[in-house]
Image (cartoon, rainbow, N blue to C red; front, side, top):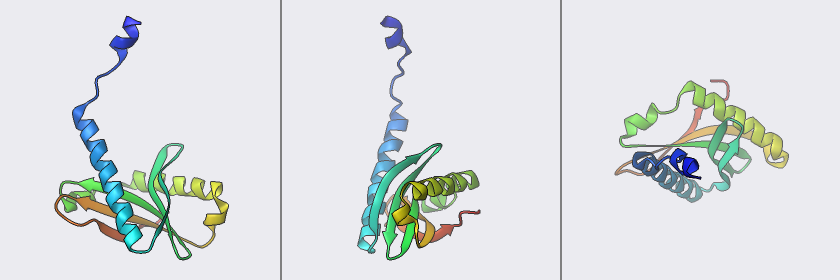
Length: 131
């Protein structure tokens, strides 16, 4: 038993704070999308090897949303790498396979940037599934 307790790691306060900021950013992004007329279908949806922060629908368009929280808006713009975009696109395909009734219609990949001291910024069609 002592070994098991020794093997446990202490929670990293910086990591915990970042996790909390991320959750608040996702909440702000969801609120913004709701105000813009989107219906939130899923939050923090996990697929093998990826997570989609928000999945929403507006009209006939299914939207997969990545939320980025950074201290400065310019940092948030650069936070989505090509590898992350590909993982999100693969996870979106997996979600559509699991939810065929929502899979019909257009699909879009959006980005919501959240930075200190400002409103969340919604970028529609921030990337393509192929990029």
